[in-house]
Length: 125
Image 1: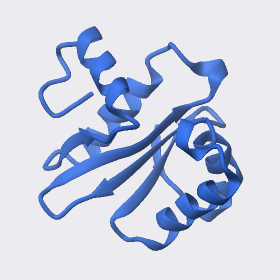
Image 2: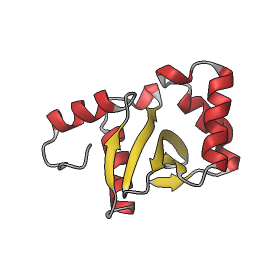
Image 3: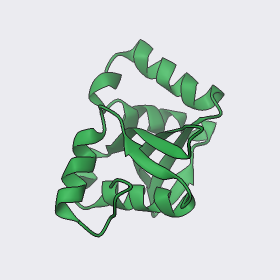
Image 4: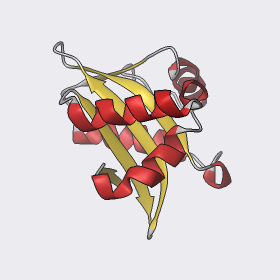
């Protein structure tokens, strides 16, 4: 289930974000978290299964009804189970009027998903 980020989940979110290649540096990671906490157009979502939070999506909402996937991360012990795709699908269901696009960091994930599942559609993975 996709849920909105709350400050109480900060350590879990930072841990998941740290799996992103460009978020390895602590200062960069802290700045990214600050962006999600202070910028209205930046939204962070967590993927919860049972009692565990095992995934994260970070999105930037642009004025042209496009939401750019800034970050996507799944706990390594839960990877290769389709969780990333389910997170993006749940996000698209939450915001059906928005078009999902990738950035440089998430583009390879989008390409991989669209090759594996052609039913996702033209708005991304």
